[in-house]
Structure formats: structure tokens, C-alpha cells
Length: 190
Image 1: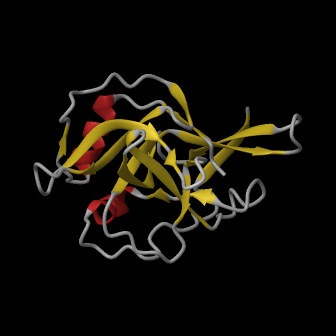
Image 2: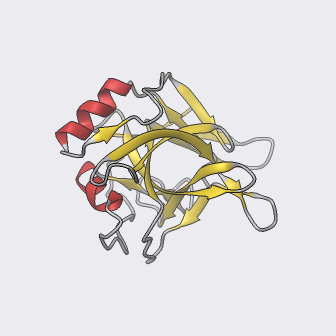
């Protein structure tokens, strides 16, 4: 599964897109300096979630990617298949995600980006954890035709028109994160 993703998104671009889709966005911890970076498990990533202090507003915060599971292994991907998620929904800001193929020690790395957008939101869940503080995980779905040759799952990339529904804790979202249509993603070997 996805254990590394890319975030190359200027904060001004995030603000513009959220204004365009009419979702008010706040920065309760200040505007972070988001550089071009590769994010791996346990690194800090950028998420957008519903504000508890300002209902009807989304907030951008920086949190840890993964929380410890029952056996201590990090929970960094979580299956979304036909599940409802009533709380803890978030969007993970990304400009690409990686998958790996091949044998251990000889793996090839593949970068997936959106064909028509420089960045996107991945459906995620966040929660507090007594060991690591607040953390998030990526939701996964059945792979679309662009990802299927490389992996049997894919991260749940949401179209911009789905963001509001995903962030609304009262909205039903069963089946919302699903496979992407063919041609939605570009892939390149890195």
C-alpha cells in the first residue's frame, strides 16, 4: 500500500481552491510553509478537517501520518470499502503518491499524479492517540485501471466536488471513495 506521498502545494493555491469550491478555510495553528516534500509514515503531513471551534468551516493543520495499531505497527492505510465514517474525516493534501513493484531489494518506484490537476485531496481519517497525539491515516479503495497494473488497492482520491460531502460529518459517504476512472492518473517511473 501507499507508504509515501508527495506534497508540492503552495498554501495560496489551497486557499484559492477551497474558496472556489465554497468551503471556508481557517488556519488555527497559522499558515504553514509547505515546501516540496516527500512524506513517509510517521512524518508530518497536511490535513484539512472540520473545525470544532467554527462550525461550517474547514481547518488546515499539520499532523502525523499513522497511529500505532494494536500490535504497535503503524496504521497508515485503512480500507474504505462500503463503510460509513461518521467522525474524524479529513482530506490529505497531496500532489502525488507512490507505489512500488518488484521483489524486495529490486523494487521499482512509481509516481501517480492527477492528469488534470496539480494537487488533490485523499480521503483520510484522523484521531487522537495517547502515544503520538493527533494522527491521520489514508483510506484505500479498489484500484482503478490506472493503478491496477501496479497494485491491488489505491488511495481514495476525491474529486473537488466531493470535498464538501466528505468533510460534512452528517453526510452519508458509504461508497464515496472509490476507484478512479481510466485516464484520471498519470504514472511515471522514478
